[in-house]
Length: 208
Image (cartoon, rainbow, N blue to C red; front, side, top):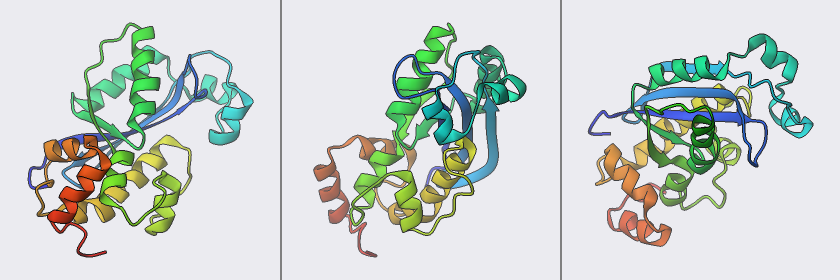
């Protein structure tokens, strides 16, 4: 990005998809513009709650593992907020990771979140990658040849999303009106058809 704004790509693994949702694996990658800085964060969280078998089948985490490797929620989020330093949070499906998982959890724990919402990389991909029919992370990684060492582990998914931003989406938006963080945030929030018209007019898709 022309302006090297720092922002944070996050990913979570949880106890499920429906409330109450407990985050058991939280990871973050610090970005500066379109470039990962190399700074990463990961923490396992032990809420001392049952982990449904369906959730364990996806991410592999068990109650025994979290009892051994997980931190108490208060300490885990203290470390996370220290890493974030107030930078905006982005994710591949930000509505789930932030709005449905993290924000309700922080409210439940009575924590004051020192972070703000950024943009959703799924929404951004839908606007910037019109040649692709599906925009789930696994599909996009395979489509653009980006390796993910272990899917459904938060740090690996966050690192893979960072590479998607750096290698695929960022180059397409460079030198366009959407080559800085605030503009990208606005682009991801636009109606998809309107966003595509604007991007076509700016010849963002000339390399397709």
